[in-house]
Image (cartoon, rainbow, N blue to C red):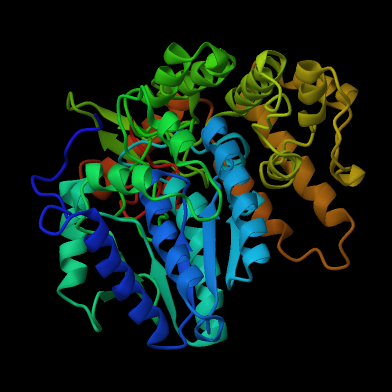
Length: 512
């Protein structure tokens, strides 16, 4: 039904009952062998559910005096998870919390989220990072790895060491099997592998040799010990083209999980979100998610023309495309495009809420904390001091923006912006330069010491030095040719940093 991913079942020799009993003995022995706390990764999917069930069952079977160390269940919510799955996971975590407390088990539940400054929308709509691509996968580190590693690092700091229990399996993929095989060759204790990304932490994968069918056989025959519904879990997987899940991610070796039900609805690391499509097609009650699918497909469209011709820091970089043509590497989304993305997101949220069934009508695609961070980035970091976010929010939702206030000393009124645009005419770069200079001056006006103002002004002029993209491209080519000795050195460029330096490392360097 779900597809065999390994030729031999882990239960083939002794059967499910004896195989599970032997594995539970192993888990119990490891648990009792030291004082190191356990951190169990839980995504809500089948593999992590099976793993947590095993751990929960051995704790429930132990005498109370042997339950000597805490087990922390962590679930990372990227804030852009498939909303149906996110609701399922949230309910599951609450069920676990109540059941553990009632049973007196040393199990604590933690829902982890990325810092608002590093959320998907803060980076894409706020900073203008282009939608993730295989060669520019900026999302995983910020949204998945950082929250889980922060928690695990805290455990290590407080206890000296930590053991991370994961539901990873060799049968998931060839890449996963290779990663696990390398870790297995370096094991320091039975079944414990050192974690390269987090010193003093070890990885334990109890179901690493189970097949896909083994997992489902276990979940169907062994009742969920905290009162969850494995049948409902199976229903989540029913009808989907893929059947994978997104495990707890603690390093960049884990492949994208955008094809699965247990991944991000905005994921552009796969060609199509077959999972969300399957949900909508196979269940009329999920039709309300169609606005999300529409937005996800918009994010996946070619975006080079939606992005600034300058890098994030304003510098220029040349590359040669597949046709052998020299071009500028485009950087972050322009202000207009970022504002359009915010409108599309708020529109999708409104449409989804209006069509969603009871229980999902308060769906939140972007939090107020994220909106506040986007607003701060636009006004303070990008000097877009007209402060357009509250206006956009009102126009798209019909509600007054519920966030706080930005320092009025930084703001330009709508009338001020209108005058400035009239003066600059069609010269957008000139408008942006003058606006940024005004922002810098206003920021330093209230400071006791105005140190740094000249450096900021100089950097602003460098960014706004060009008339347009064609002019910038000509400058970059001339500079490159001068460096290569093809042209006499132009002293004009001596005032500026190397604008085609191949060692440039700032973000948004994707060339697609």
